[in-house]
Amino acid sequence: MKYHKRLYFVIEDTNLKLPNWIGFLMRSIDSIPVTASFRYLGRELPKHLNKIFSKKNHWVVVC
Image (cartoon, rainbow, N blue to C red; front, top):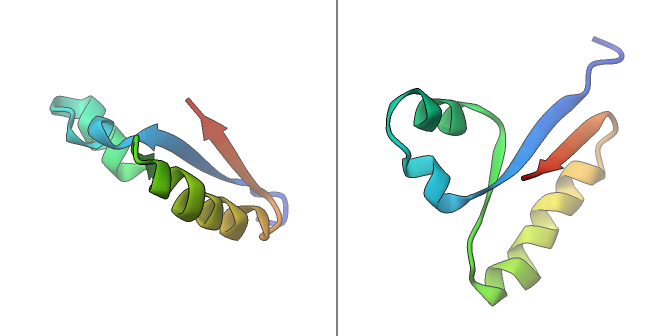
């Protein structure tokens, strides 16, 4: 566990509403939802990313 890296995915918020196993997978992983709102992209998203990047051994995948 010393070298374990937690993996976060930045995904569009509409992907959380997908049906079947793909939607289940999107809701089950550690994800950061992204919307098209400029306010969210400019204020909230950097706060979430800074919180993740401040911890060691965490990775973020932007799809």
